[in-house]
Amino acid sequence: MKRVYEPIAYGLDPIKDCFWTTTVQKQSWPTLDRDLSCDVVIIGAGYTGISAAYHLAQDGLDVCLIDAQYPAFGASGRNGGFCCLGGTMADDRILDHRYGKDGRRAYHACEAAAVDLVQSLIGDLHLNVDRHSKGETIMAHRPKDAKSLSQPDLSCQENYGVSSVYHDQDELRQLGLHAGFHGARTLPIGFGLNPQKYAYGLLSAAQSLGVRVFANSPAQAIDGSTVSANGHQLKAQKIIIATNGYSSEDLVPWMRSRFMPVQSSVLVTRPMSQEELDAQGWTSDQMAYDTRNMLHYFRLMPDRRFLFGMRGGIFATPKAEAKIKREIRSNFEMLFPKWSQVETEHYWSGLVCLTRSYLPYVGPIPNKNSIFTGFGYHGNGVAMATYSGLILADLVQGKTPRVPYPAALKTIPKRFPLGRFRRQLLRPAYAMMQMLDR
Ligand SMILES: Cc1cc2nc3c(=O)[nH]c(=O)nc-3n(C[C@H](O)[C@H](O)[C@H](O)COP(=O)(O)OP(=O)(O)OC[C@H]3O[C@@H](n4cnc5c(N)ncnc54)[C@H](O)[C@@H]3O)c2cc1C
Image 1 (cartoon, protein in one colour):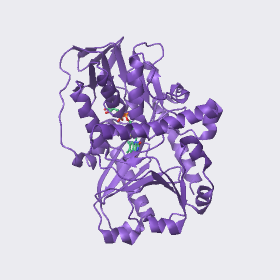
Image 2 (cartoon, rainbow, N blue to C red):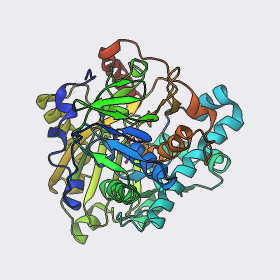
Image 3 (tube, rainbow, N blue to C red):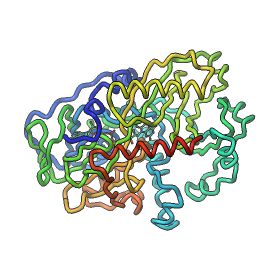
Image 4 (cartoon, rainbow, N blue to C red):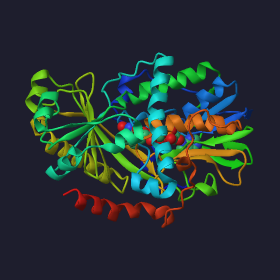
């Protein structure tokens, strides 16, 4: 497989200390070791693939779900667990320009519907996912950001039909969200969850409906509607490619350069005592992120461990990984200085996926009647990838999706320049973002 990063990024090394893996039971899945046929083959067993498999099986279809490694190996098993709005880097001005006000509202409506979908799946399937937080809070890292956050937020009402609330520094203290931020705003949509418990809960529901799951079975080629993996043929009516940031350039030529994998890293501390939490003034389990372009995201989890994540890193080598690990720790200590003695027990990294349109693409691969794909959730795929999987399940059956499917999700992203070297584009982009964040 031709991929964008060094091989290490696609192996087990970046997740050897992933916290989530310690919270679920170890499982194993068979490897594809014979030819098979079914209605739909899904390539990639993250939220997109698992959700598509679950919804297709609910509709009575025979589904095979294969993964190059194992289910939830990719971003779905290693994310920050923010089930939140998002999926795009396009702001309202861009969305208005491209799709008009109605098109922009339609996109935002599906962001909120995506969070609702995860919520209903968790409820309907009785999944225990360590849920917490009422919406999410954006924290101003400079006084000028607090000033702009303090202005009335009309777009929240218009886009999501709910009101957001501004908090000044005094109120942040009372809320147990004190860490030197200059103000904040809470939007009451979204919640935190354990990403692996969610992924494996949904997967187990899909398997109980008959979905066949194969690990260590990388799709090597697609011919018509037949997928080759491990030297065997999977024949199907339809195929869904759900490989997102872990996609390769050569599985289908159309995908080449249309996705930009970007590294994101997370640390998790040991559980903290009440005294340690009080010392920092951060005692709330509200999930939060800051106003930086190179944003940090963080939340105090139900077991009193603190999760802290950020973007960064152009290379996936042991040396580059060690550097990012040092950087994330130093950013953590800069934002939460009273916890500088609190050890990092877990650290890992993974690939999120951007597109040139700044939006996810969910739909058919042009001129390939039988192949569909969903990718490009811009680091916010817990909800949006689940939603994309549901849309794909309907599209492969030739049905109008049962959930809103706005024009914004149907826009085919153009290719990035520089081919397999396109991650070099991130270097000036990151430098610019860091400058704007000062
Ligand atoms: C560190 C980190 C933190 C994040 N935090 C958040 C967050 O807090 N909130 C949020 O909403 N989103 C977050 N995200 C993003 C979110 O996790 C993703 O958008 C989402 O999981 C994407 O799901 P997916 O199923 O499309 O792709 P993935 O989960 O990446 O799955 C793709 C799968 O495809 C498989 N694959 C690739 N090629 C092949 C092949 N040829 N054959 C078979 N299988 C193949 C891979 O092995 C992988 O398992 C984060 C991501 C990272 C990396």
